Length: 297
Image 1 (cartoon, rainbow, N blue to C red):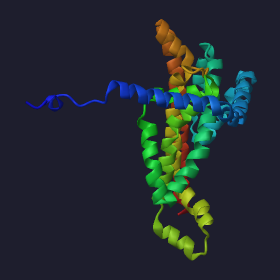
Image 2 (image 1 turned 30 degrees about the horizontal axis):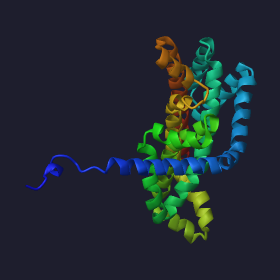
Image 3 (image 1 turned 45 degrees about the vertical axis):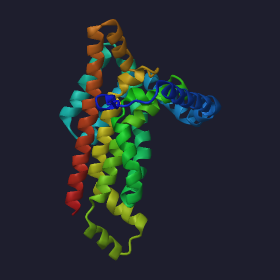
Image 4 (image 1 turned 180 degrees about the vertical axis):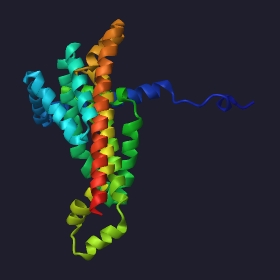
């Protein structure tokens, strides 16, 4: 009688073959990291220098100056007295409970990650909006970046660059950049074709149509993408702390391993406070820019 076990259990690859494939892939990546790791790390040296400088700037600046600057930026973005007062109270409480330095470190890494994500994400989103072929290539990559667990792509990053700020930054950017790419692409594609035709009728070049018509009209959608990027970057703070990124994530990680409930709760609330402030400020700015465009029409 023929063997019918394949009907009840899925036929698997031979274990020796699987071990050989894994060993070959692991060996190839280790050889690649030994050969090119230092070179790739040197590419990120300027970014590391800027990140270290910015962190030292926030840590060395008197707390009241940082508070004034952050509060001023929140007010300029939101024009909301309530949100500005909430910002002041939140940062005063953060300082009072001894979390000021960790908050400044987190603020520095999140700010740099957001700017890197914007610098890469908006041009990629524009390229996707202009070309269906590029969109077809990039969209599956974004799907992988958004759905793959962060712990999985931390492994090759740490193997290649070791433990420190740059691997953490790369991990945060990989996780946080998809929204700004997707929503830049969507915002530009949603611009009314009649408006573009009118711009073409006035003799506007392709570059002028992009800078003077498409990007301004897509700005509310792009701002929504930036908002989501900031939120996702903040959600990576604890995971990034596992590979040496200092900030609010490390006390949370310490509280998990040592069961310090209060320590984790306070630092968790500090992360939430930053997230709410960034979220409300960027949303308010997006609404104001949309209202401004409506007035222009």
